[in-house]
Amino acid sequence: MAKIVLGIATSHSPMLALNADQWRRYATGDLQHTGLVYPPAGISMTYEEGLAFVPDEIRNRDISDEVFEKQVAQCQHGIAELAKTIEEVNPDVTVIISDDQDEWFYEDNMPTFSIFWGDSVPIIPRPDGDSLRDADVTSAITKGYGDVAMDVPVQKDLGRHLIDHMIQNDFDVAHFTYVKESYGGKVGRRYMREDGELDLVRETPPKNQGLPHGYAFVVKRLFNNQPRTILPIFENTCYPPNQPTVRRSYKFGEEIRKAIESWDSDLRVAVVASGGMSHFVVDEEMDWMVLDGLKNKDAEALQSIPRERLYSAASETQNWIALGGVLHDTDLNMELVEYVPVYRTPAATGGGWAFARWQ
Image 1 (cartoon, rainbow, N blue to C red):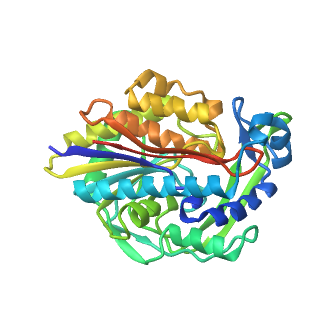
Image 2 (cartoon, rainbow, N blue to C red):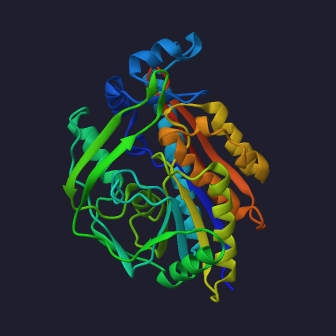
Image 3 (cartoon, rainbow, N blue to C red):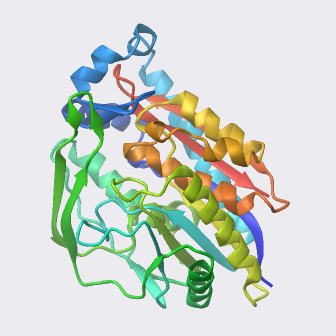
């Protein structure tokens, strides 16, 4: 039977492709943000509303160049350590649990869970483009999600086995086996505001789109641009109304483990969670709830993270929670390599960037 030999969890923020000076210029885009979600109630606010909402100790935090330089170094150390670990363990296949954000899935079809099991999947370098930020910032970001066109091999036999296992065990997963010539469409951000639901729809014009960024980041940064064999698994963490509950994400991870361990193969498998933790607003309390739950293999704590702490992009933390389900009944234990809460503006915009491994 197949064996899980490694767990990895990583943030994949655009900031991880930037230097400290670019962090400051990247942060100017936050001033135009109209859908920031603030803990603990998960209320969506504009930047100015958020600035008035956060306490003085947040508004007055030190966000100097020296602080950013130290934090950049911590983040790069975390990524380098995870890349080194993957190279040393050298798994035969890497299962990646992440989410899609206006790349392959739109509101014409937004599955809660999906598995890609084609022969391979392309990475297509992205064109630069973000009028809110400087050209060198956007160029670095796009390169950070894949600057070399390649086909990444997919372990389709494991994919088919996972789909069969999930269907037999009460998870009605979607599946797909090929990539279309172009993708585009509309996605709504239906988060709570004090005066009702946020009415924010983003439309993406049709474009060539390879492997979504949560997966391409793993290939670019953790595989060092080498096309190791992967299996992409998707959770719709970000977009209401059909997001999985936190408990469902954890149970999904448990079934992924059972499926891998029941696969008739002697291959060695790594499982990676890509995304998170809290962002686009920092929520250190929530981050530590999850990190402590993972460290202690506390299934109930992980399944009890309040939904309102996981709106917007913070919802990617559910990929980490799913990984907790995968690894709970294994002999692998968590080491937190780095946790870096980055406040890039006085309104607490930024994120809790984290890097962990289970060996």
